[in-house]
Image (cartoon, rainbow, N blue to C red; front, side, top):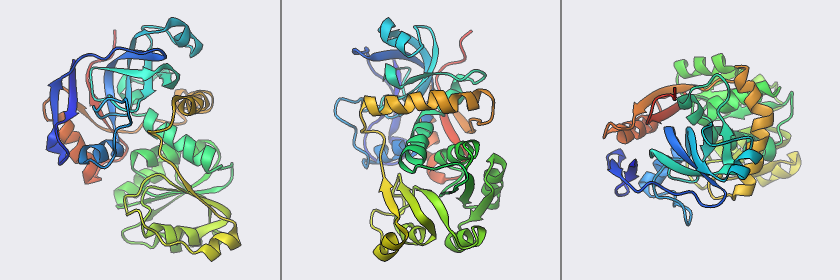
Length: 336
C-alpha cells in the first residue's frame, strides 16, 4: 500500500510517500480501506520527534481516518452496529496516513448521515478530545461560561459548536479579525483577538467580573496564571497541549479561595476501553447533532495523498496557523 512516513525527525519535507505492507487486523480490530486521513497538531509533534509513538503502534503518523470496513470480527462489528462494507470513521493511535489502517472496532463510528468521508475523517480526534476534556473532565453544564483558546483550530471549531449545542455560553480567542468572525459564525457569543486585546481583561468585562466556569487551553505557559485569575468560583482549567511551554506560575491562594480545579490529559496513550466509552457518548449525544447539521464539520483544505508533497504541504499549512478548521489528506473518492 501507499503511505506517508516520517523518514527522519525534522521539517515538513521529511514526510515522504512510500510503499508499506498492508496491515492485518488483530482480534478486536477492523481493517479499513482509508478514503481520507485527518491532520492534527500531534502529527506535527511526532514528525519533530516530540510525541513518541506508543508501544506496538505503527510509526506512520495519523490519528483519525474515514473509509470502508474491509475485514474484522463480524460479531464484534455487529455489537457496534457495524458490518463489513460500512462507511466508518475511527480514532487510531497511529497509522492513519495510509491507504489501509487497522482500528479498534470499539473506536469506530458510523459516518454521520449526509457527510462525505473527507468530512468524517475530520471528526474523531477533535470530537473525542473535546468531549473527554470539556464534558467528562471539565464537567461543563448548560448555562455555564466556557472559554476556548484558539477558536479556529480543529479543537476550537469543534469546541465552539459542541458547547453551544449543549447549552453552554462560549467565549473564544483568535488571532485575526477574519478568525474572530469565523468563531462568531460558528456560535461563539464573544470573540477576543488575543493579538490586540488582553484576553483576561476582556473575559472579566464580558462576564461582569464573575469569570468563566471552564477553560480549554492548548497554550499553557504564561497563559495559566491569567486563566487562574479569570476562573469563576469552582472553575475548571483543562490543559490539552503546551504550545506556550511546559512551565507555568500558579497563584495557589486563588486556587484555594475559589476552589479551582487545574487538570489536563492526553488522549493517545489511553486504553481502548477508555476511548470506547467516549465513542458511545459521541454516538448518543453528538452524532444526531451532526446529522441534523446543528454541528458541522469545518474543512479548510484537502490535499491529494498521491501527490508526493501532500504530507509536507499539509504540515506546512498546519504550522502556518492560517487555517480555520481541519486539514485532510484524501486517498480515494466516495464509494459508488
